[in-house]
Length: 369
Ligand code: GDD
Ligand code: MN
Image (tube, rainbow, N blue to C red; front, side):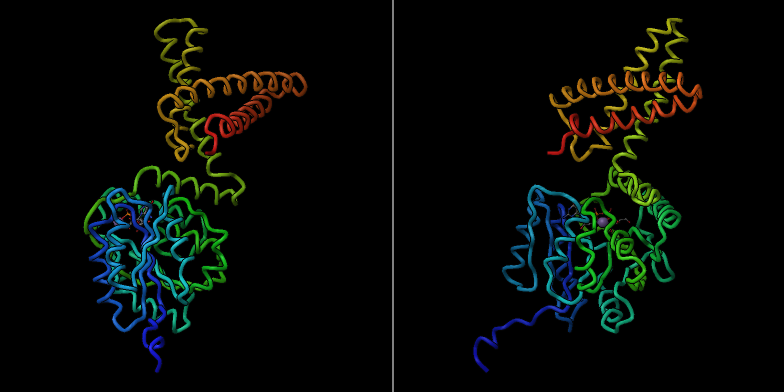
């Protein structure tokens, strides 16, 4: 045998993709555990790090310098769990790919059983689940457990899926099936598994593998309210058959909250002093302020304005909304004269002003960078 053949490393049968953000204290332990769990399997680990400030990428590369099965894909200027998983899987040439969290909450010991079901041809994807017999999510805090169960229930109601744990970020699948659907996946948010299952549809044969969700090893969870809200938007969008954009749904929800704020302030103002005009002006201003702040925090969080640009954005937003209100009043009055159905005229006017405000806000106030 020639020297080059001897030096040729075995090609991986399984790529384990590990999304990381600030997981420096976990990577070495995860590689150790993968090594133990995957004995006898040709595996590789692909860490996808979003330029963590704690030096996670450097920690992975230190390991990679010693262990050719480990590599690190460092992404700069981007954030997002789902996107990181997608890019990691796309960088694999192995026939099977798995995704596992870096914090050791996912039990790596079930990986060989998952692989056996794929190689045996019984399934195209094996989802690790906490919510069947043999699995558990006991390590969840009460709050997180409740959110997870609620999201699971809502998902089952709103989008038909065979997954008992659609929120799971732990799964393994055939790479050829992933490559087919990759262009249609969304890189935003945490819900990569659900997106894969929903996008692929019933032709993707799914099996499940029970496991116990463990405690986080080092570091902190990156889950936050925004991720939960984003997920809610996604479900709502799916309910409308993807007719409505999640961003628009949030804009409309924020607008409805603004209406409540408006009426509450108007009511309060009239209690204090019976000057309708003054109370109405204050209420309008309060509603616009609340709408601006909520939209900045939720609807356009990815383009969030800060400091001076926030002030500039607020002035612009008020201008946009004022034009929206005038157009709404004019349109509604004209319709009322033409048709004389007060509620229809009012509703059409309101819908038109929401559409106007949304379009102008997206174009001018929270411009895409
Ligand atoms: N590259 C990258 N970019 N990785 C990220 C990002 C990001 O923006 N956000 C989180 N991660 C990585 C973390 O470093 C970790 O390895 C993994 O994704 C999961 O993040 P955690 O912060 O540990 O999330 P969790 O434990 O709260 O959430 C778990 O449960 C969720 C719901 O039950 C995860 O398993 C999620 O996938 C799951 O949806
Ligand atoms: Mn975690």
